[in-house]
Length: 119
Image (cartoon, rainbow, N blue to C red):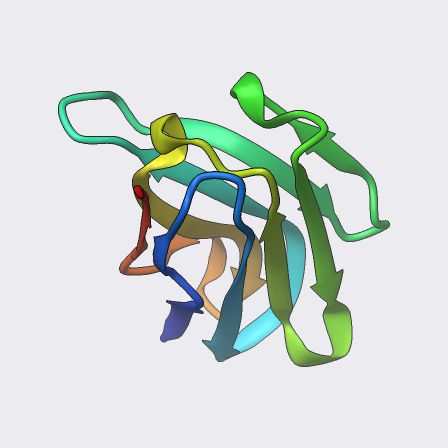
């Protein structure tokens, strides 16, 4: 069984920063990519950033220039640094991993961490 646990969310003022973390654990053989999604109230879940096993990163939506994704492969952990936060960044942020475990290939999700940007 694979578990993804996010942390680091919270309430921050506009212009502030947060660093989200996601640790993967369990019977993991290898991780192909780790991804961050977000879902704002009443909106669809959207892809924020991805990082592959070779360190290639991609950023989506309107976060380019304000977000940095990184990973510690030894710890199976991915980070999302959020800077210059705006109220429209308010959402539940979800970690996702494309990985191989002893049962095969799977896509696993964390439970989400709330980010609220408000003065």
